[in-house]
Image (tube, rainbow, N blue to C red; front, side, top):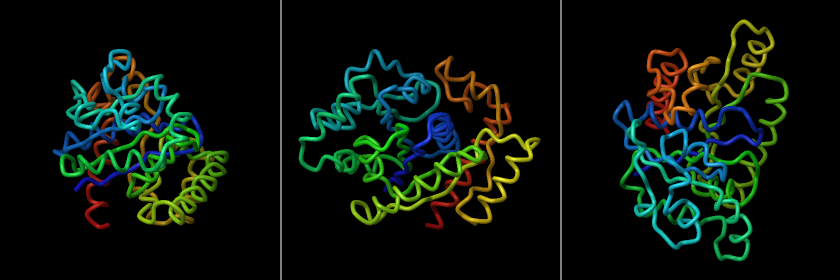
Length: 256
């Protein structure tokens, strides 16, 4: 049975998509069967996996509107060894179209239930806003992985996200929990980042992952080549950190 996780943060530009594609590639490298679901109409996780969003015949849009199943719509990430349920601009219309539909916030959950036996991990890349798309992700997931930079404003955004997760847990998805907080784009030379990191560990304890993802140019370059950083430059510090994070994730879900 698949472990389904949202990678979510209501703040933009914190590395959600970078985390999703590189965690997917890292998990695939260590032998896990992985499905990446792109719930962002920008389709960055789709493109970053090497799948052309402009050429998608079926996408997560059709899956949410129940005109296609997940198995019909998935594509293989050519170099990374995982499957992708891609997204493109059409998905922006789903926010409006879903409003009038029954079970509108549970569409993704129902679709993923059909393929739960096919994968070990399903990773959902959520948009940086709390609309019906993110809500579908949170209702489908067993837990949330929160990537965050160790900066003051990121702490503010984290408290908003924690409140959102509590509300979804109470009203829509009793299985939902925070799996862990991943410190990304970390630069140990910056005192403030060290201080925020310590605050996180003090407040959230073992919910903070041991792995820290350093600020890394090669991770930033990789999407322009249509590959996760883990595949693009396996020797880069950021890539090695994500493979270590994948191993930590496997160990953590075994304890859940």
